[in-house]
Image (cartoon, rainbow, N blue to C red; front, top):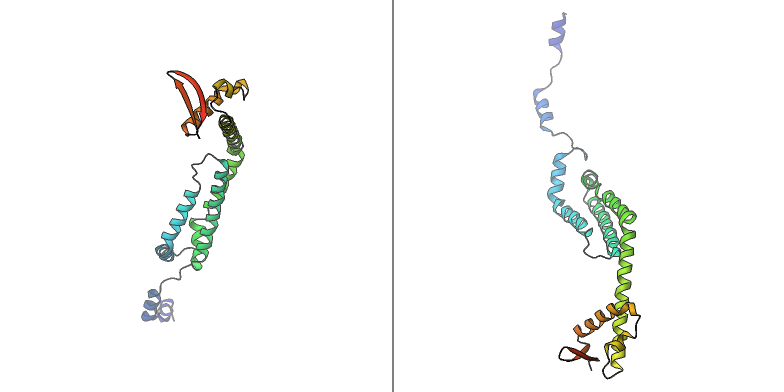
Length: 201
């Protein structure tokens, strides 16, 4: 038997079997299945988007208190863990989806957190503490002035100044004006001349 005879004598595949094999879609893997990813996004995408938005929103803080910024970073990292847990609970493809689309979020926030603590936090903390100390001292001046005025039936400004160091007079005047604005003290005037201050009864 010649070569061509042997070639043509080999069994040809059944055409029906070939068509059936073609009709079976290839098995999709968790890593490469675009159809599976589309189905996952249709079912869970909106929820995942909301979680990602919450993470982004958590890192923005309007407060000047550096402690609030730390809390914001901690909250954002906590939400990152919640996002990973949610994806893992969404079936076999959930963890793969997280690795493909969300795994970089937490490292990015952790890096920003480290940078903040190393570069910005020390100065912001010092400035915050200084400002809080000033506010505390100002409130103490107001309490001292109000107590003194309450114990006397009208007091002169120089009597109030005498309660404090000379270099504090500017802050003392601010405290007096703040007490008047708060409605806790009054001042008696004779035309443009100040007579005395008094505590409101």
